[in-house]
Length: 379
Ligand code: SF4
Ligand code: SF4
Image (cartoon, rainbow, N blue to C red; front, side, top):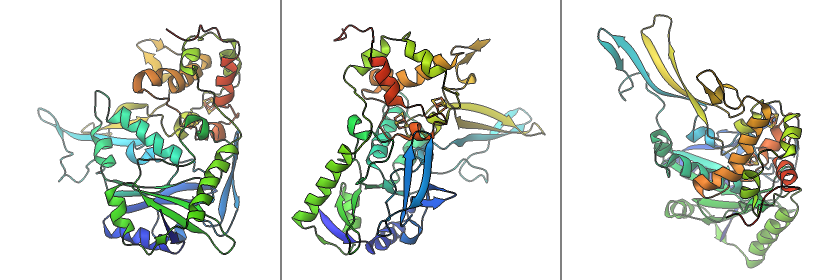
């Protein structure tokens, strides 16, 4: 473990840019932290923090020493791997049918993967990428766009030293400190005299970039302080999710009365699925222009909260808010385990912050657990 000073972040960005990476990191825009292209350390949200609670998000002035003093952006990294709208192909009408025009030399090709360096991935979001890998790479079918983009990523994690108002990564085992899966891990340490970073590499390409930076070995007390900050952050999380037998409890209680209670509040607005770093559902649309000669096939984010999502010749399978909310929660916390061997929730808390009526997935799962009708252990 090494130590770098705050000013070295510019060298880190330059080292990545000189290798051809577009550097994507947090920046404050329109009252929120968004992840977008950053050119230098001055683009980071220096001295800005976020305040989050159910249905509430706001930025405010924080500690001027810190570049990563906020907790979590509403924008998760999935948008760079699974774009909200992705043109799969374009075609033009010909005398005997259609001709696909998205050969790489054609002017209107679908977006090509780029070398992207993600700066400031939180540990929960790193685990979300691991979950998306299982969906898009590790299942029976591989998504070629995801695969090509994933292979061009450089991941810089920033460990959390402060919990947000809706975080519960501690109970999901996904944070507040990342254990593996990154190229470089940073921990921003606040000191009266100014902040500094602890830095560690998690891959050979991370180590190679690190060798270019002005750094020194971290002192044992600095490493200890980071460990203590991680323990403190975990202990300060205001909510937990009890995961023991949760898969079975949710699967065995589709008619629990709590589903009706939450359905009475849920607006089926789909906000929770849009901000969730692991929700991956999409729909495919074919669009022609007014001449009828040019056509595009586009893939768009979709949500299990819409009626159309479960429409099958003549009606929607999940016609009620109850069935749609139940589908979402039981997928995240029950059937996802059957499909991918892990929960589909990383405890980032975004769905709680961005639900306009403040529905809290931890509270709902806890309520189902109470008075559940499940014989445990499940066969
Ligand atoms: S749980 Fe909240 S965010 Fe999700 S669909 Fe219902 S109202 Fe919208
Ligand atoms: S379900 Fe909610 S808390 Fe879990 S990963 Fe998705 S947005 Fe985060």
